[in-house]
Amino acid sequence: MNIKESLTKIISSIPSDVTLVAVSKTKPNALILEAYEAGQKDFGENYVQELCDKHEQLPKDIHWHFIGHLQSNKVKFIAPFVHLIHGVDSLKLLQEINKQGQKNNRVINCLLQVYIASEESKFGLDFNECLEILKSPELKQLANVNIIGFMGMASNTEDQNQIRKEFQSLKKFQSSLITNHHPLNTLSFGMSSDYKIAIEEGSNMIRIGSIIFGERDYSKK
Ligand SMILES: *Cc1c(COP(=O)(O)O)cnc(C)c1O
Image 1: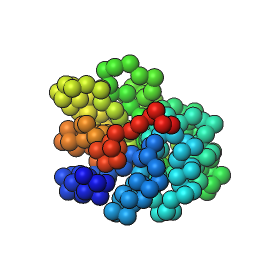
Image 2: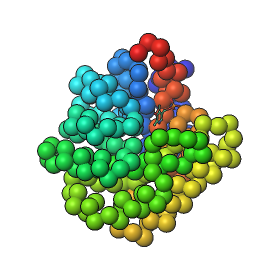
Image 3: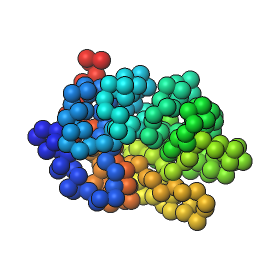
Image 4: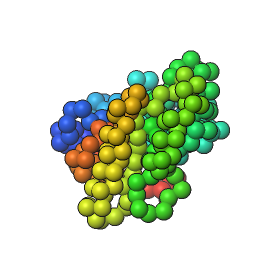
């Protein structure tokens, strides 16, 4: 299947209110353009330098999602144009995003990254830490960031039941906050291997790379 066929197949199988973010990390501009010309407008990248280069070289109406781990000192490079930052995991990072948002005279949309997998990971917040951030007085001072929901990643396992449970825990957490004043309705979870389960469990933003662009080859980077 070529890129256009893969995209069409995925899009025809998902509800229209689910946003497909095509994860293009490590992939050349030519392939991204192929997807763009097939109608895809949302793309996800994990590395700041790569994202900035691609933003400069590719059509300006692309929505660029930053889905990697963002270091505070690199926020300034993506702040002028980034559409959504998925992996926010500290108040300190939010404060820096706010500062750069201010400099660029824009409000930057963010998702809190929640740690739902059972395996060890350095990144992500637990539910209590999310609540602390959402309720903190400091957050109210940040006029140039907007937290619009949550991002999560299930365990890297064959056990579909476990993946399903992990997604459910995030959906349940989000639902428990709906009464709050935050517009937290974006749920970014589901990748190539588990996006069908993710949508069944309430995801409305899926991040898909390899089944669109093919497997990634890191040895050439
Ligand atoms: C690479 C990546 C994806 C896409 O993974 P695939 O398995 O290729 O679909 C999704 N989310 C994050 C955070 C990633 O780093």
